[in-house]
Length: 65
Image (cartoon, rainbow, N blue to C red; front, side, top):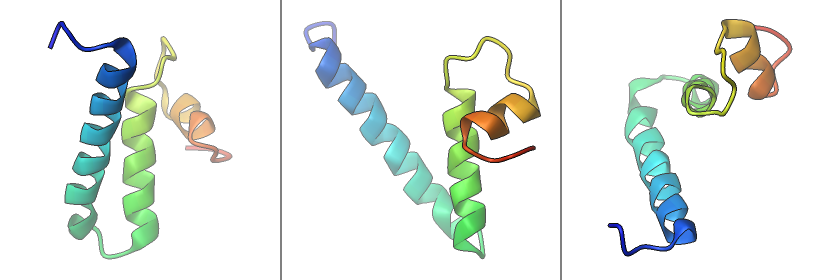
């Protein structure tokens, strides 16, 4: 893996995250709930140092937690 360019590594990680989100989708009855779960994962992996509920919601584009 050390021979991969940074861009290739980032695309590999992004692809893996998309796969995880697709695998989680059947666990939710509503599509919107699955989207929220995906946004939650994105927030956890975001670059904010503190990850409070309000900060995660704001980063995901919601108005509150």
